[in-house]
Image (cartoon, rainbow, N blue to C red; front, side, top):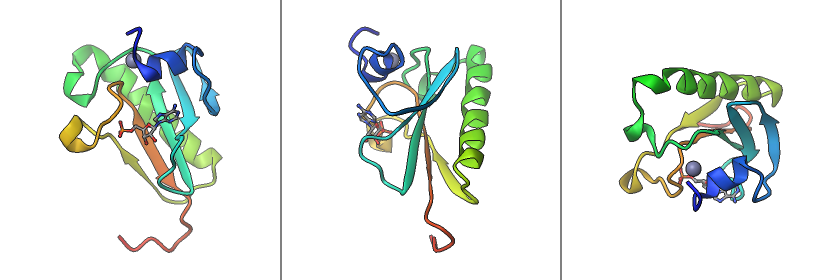
Length: 111
Ligand code: AMP
Ligand code: ZN
């Protein structure tokens, strides 16, 4: 997808604060963080959203979740939230699948 923001970031056509990358995914800092630690775990393959995944994407999805767990450990997070926003009504603004990793509040989260 030539006009997709996260495709451009994963192809390094647009800079981002990248904290991890391998052949299948990239993890970078959210430009407008909603938590002390806010990372986006993004597959290099263009998939629009969770609503667009197929049976062929099982491995990609497990890669995303495993990478998020790994990043949370590396960041020293003892607890965190993992969120997929799906569709406009679900708060998704960028139409390229991404997993939000949110944490770093210490032990004070009460929600
Ligand atoms: P969503 O609302 O689930 O589609 O999340 C999109 C996220 O991407 C938001 O939290 C934005 O702050 C973040 N974002 C938008 N543009 C950039 C960018 N250029 N670099 C890093 N994060 C971005
Ligand atoms: Zn894309």
